[in-house]
Image 1 (tube, rainbow, N blue to C red):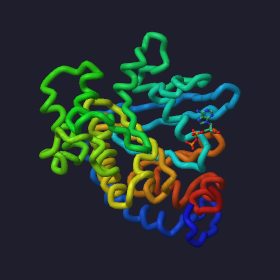
Image 2 (image 1 turned 90 degrees about the vertical axis):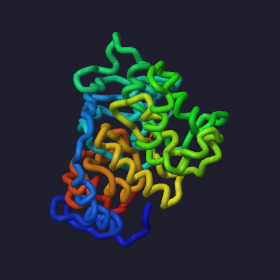
Image 3 (image 1 turned 30 degrees about the vertical axis):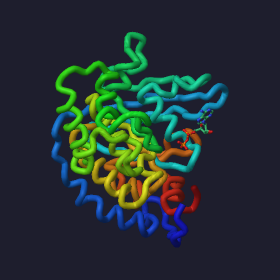
Image 4 (image 1 turned 90 degrees about the horizontal axis):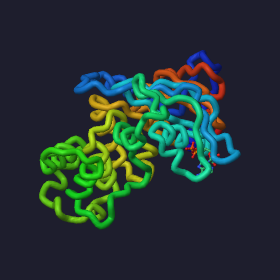
Length: 289
Ligand code: ADP
């Protein structure tokens, strides 16, 4: 949490966020003007979502829509349930022993928890990028991306798809002459873009990013943010971040969570300048968190 001076103001009376966040919100509209949509992504709708770890009720009755071709940021203090929510979206949550989810997650009209739905197809449609870049350690750059294709049984020209995915992840120019070198030989920021290329290779419709830049240096972080703005032309993007400036820079919508509940979701500039709920204001003005 930043130690910038805090500014108090009544909710709904033009609350002022932390100065850095304020500057990011001011700049954001220019970046969001690029609304060109390359292909139609899909909407995700959470309807009365609850998630548990054994007896722990970690997510409570969250209902929220992630619009197609938009970036939605999930913010809130550590432990409030952001990661749990996003892991419920592609059914990763249920992989944790003792963990379960209740409620509905709709990918357009399809409930991803419906009994007839194949969980592998859910995870292919809803790709995930994690906090720490996790390239397959023994594989080359090329094979890291091709592995995603092979695992998902996608056919077609693997070489071409690998190149397309690396281009889409803004990594091609940096790696095109060293495709057979190990993926783990890349810098942290490059490894994260490699993981994004691997995710893109299987042609998902939604990309979930759980603090994708929190382990990266500022330059690599900016590259990831630029990439997120580019990727939303093709995908629906959900990004968990503890960095409010980042949310202000990349997100069209921001959702604020607290102790397992969704407090508020709205346009990003509203959340940071004029939120409806006093708890949102306290958080975005740095009073806690
Ligand atoms: P956030 O992403 O906002 O930091 P999490 O979704 O990771 O929050 O955690 C929400 C709650 O669920 C916390 O109370 C956390 O301790 C608990 N929790 C998260 N992961 C596990 C787990 N694997 N086992 C048990 N409890 C967990």
